[in-house]
Length: 296
Ligand SMILES: [Fe+2]
Ligand SMILES: [Fe+2]
Image 1 (spheres, rainbow, N blue to C red):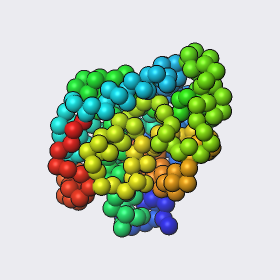
Image 2: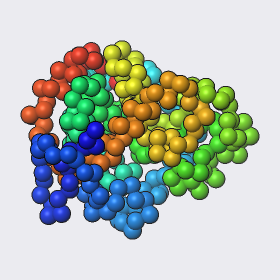
Image 3: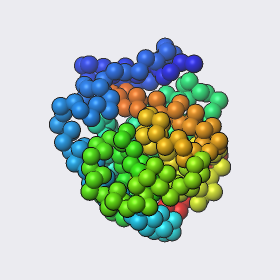
């Protein structure tokens, strides 16, 4: 299996177009010239990212996630198509991401096109890549204008202990859940192998887009929905934490999430996809797996 395609970031700042058939070598630097996800690197964004996680870790509580799920399950804010949402996402900036300085639609299309090249027959996976970040519209006023800490960044479970692998873990000391004996043991309120669908995960664009897809009766396979819902759950898919909460279906779906995540991370480079060229293909996938208009 080729890992990706030929998206080496160019050091002279020129934009390259995806299209050659050479096997991909994952780029070692991002668009700021640093290693991917290097939270310790001295960078202009470092302090901002750390402050972001401080707020995230203090404010994401079990009660908060419960309220957000109830509120957004109403889907009473906007009616629009998947493609309209892709275009809308260009108005959004993700402050938590130390790698990303491109319009969001480029990130979506870069990820999707890179996967399409290596997995040409898995059309559901191409579409999953295209839509995986659409939940970031939560930052926009008509979707509630949520703060960054409630929309983006890595996610983690609530209702059980915060694993040491979670980035900037020290800030959990000011989260009220860490003092609650019901929530601060390894299993907390959960039984071994209970399945991730029964676990509260910190609220953000993953869980919101999962909700939108599910409630609008998408025909995407379970693995696609799993990728959308857990792609920011780095403690699980990168560090291997919280596996005691997974069931056998989760184990299967996690294999696809590992495939997806390589592309999500390494496609954030100075590689431009020509939107008009690929648009007809993605519109055909949207038509196959989603209704023409969705409730958001
Ligand atoms: Fe994301
Ligand atoms: Fe992404």
